[in-house]
Amino acid sequence: MDTGSVRAVNLSRVLAAALAQEEPPTRADLAAATSTTRATATRLVDELVAHGVLVEAAPDAERPRRPGRPGIPLQPGTRHVALGLQVEVSHLTAVVVDLAGTVRARRRVEDDLRGSDAEPVLARLGALAEHVLSDLPSGTVVVGTGLAVPGLVAEGGMLLRAPNLGWSDVAVAALFPPPAGTGPPTVGNEADLAAVTVSSTAPGRPGAHPDFLYLSGATGIGGSIVLDGHPLTGRHGWAGEVGHVTVDPDGPPCACGSTGCLEQYAGSRALASAAGLDPSAGTSAIAAAARSGEPAAIAAVERAGTALGVALAVVVNVLDVPVIVLGGHLREIGELVRPVLEDTLARRVLSAGWVAPRVEVAPAHATAALGAAYTELHRLVTDPRPWLTGPVTSREAR
Image (cartoon, rainbow, N blue to C red; front, side):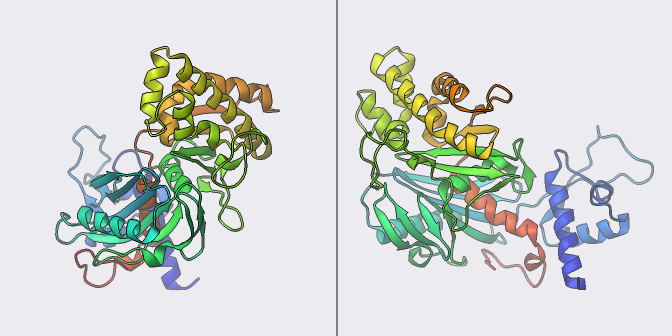
């Protein structure tokens, strides 16, 4: 390994260790965490501090002191940010997130984008991105842009198919107009990107579950299988399409061309219709109706829970995933659907008698736009070197 590669590895190790700590670490803490000498850790930290990747904080008066000079706590800097974008059937979202995981700006526009034309929608998203970046202070560095879409994504940012949007073979990365000072976006599946906010509580900070199945829902239902903290995307990057697992071959037709898919029972529009509400009614309205004792809403939630259990039991039996996290619109009915879902899993998962699958509701912040931003910031953590050379300019993308 050459000198540059060694430096890259050491910088990444020190930065990753700093971000993973619950309490702000000192240089001595990072030397111990990375098994390097104090002098080496200090040299690497000083380089990260000089470029604003890490910043020095005021010493904590309540923190126990070691003999000698008190250590200076280190925190993630706020200079480096990432832009996270999302196209969903019901909305467009743009967020700006810094290395501490703090959302610096956010904008969401509600709309019905079923059957829409991709190019004007992506143009609107580009304008939304410009808006959230416009108020950032001078000197802010945009390290990358992530763009989440609901469907099959191939290499190069090509969206092969998004049934509920009605998009096929759309060159998303090429059609999206990047804001001034930023580069082309990295396009990814929305469920995989939303799952990043569960596998990581902030950029570089691991979450509680290294292995889980994440369900992301809106009009349709997406899924992400996460193993050892990373989405299992499959050979072509298309794994996790749980919404199109067949629950009943004789069930209702799906926009994908099949019949009886899970999202025809647990998608937001299917849930609303089954509950006797307008299909555009939000999941919160369905949950409120079920909690108030409306028989149709209660039946719709139970039907969705059973369908989820049938589909997810297949995934658990095949992959031995221990935790299921309900995100997207499913988090709003998570506590209502959990009893039926868990009962169905208990009957259908072969290993449930020994280790029953756990069902959890995703935190409110678990969105694909946020996960897209986290993913771009993770690239900085993996190799900080591009951000430690030359002058730093406002809204510079590399």
